[in-house]
Image 1 (tube, rainbow, N blue to C red):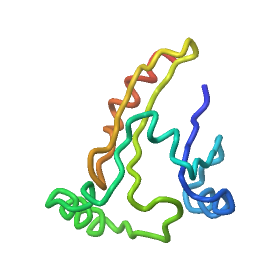
Image 2 (image 1 turned 90 degrees about the vertical axis):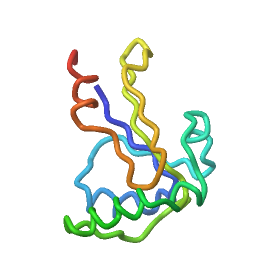
Image 3 (image 1 turned 30 degrees about the vertical axis):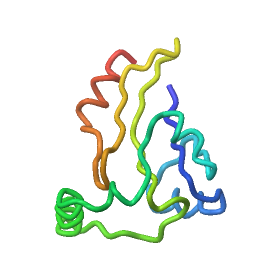
Length: 114
């Protein structure tokens, strides 16, 4: 099983990402945003302009998280997808607003059979 991360920034920033996160797996860059669009991931200012987004930002700040430098499209939202070896999508989550993340338990349940 492989974990793959796709970002929208320039690959020149991969080393910094790996240093900050400790992630050593497969890492790809899609500045064209074609992969994000094909998956139906949202983009645009609207996703960042809500009370919920402000609440998420305040909560993250309170927990000690700080926004670092951004690379790629600042307004591109992401998500999480689990695809098994047969190509079947076992889990799909698309962020609807900034700070919207999948539940870890849901991701782990999708990986249970591995």
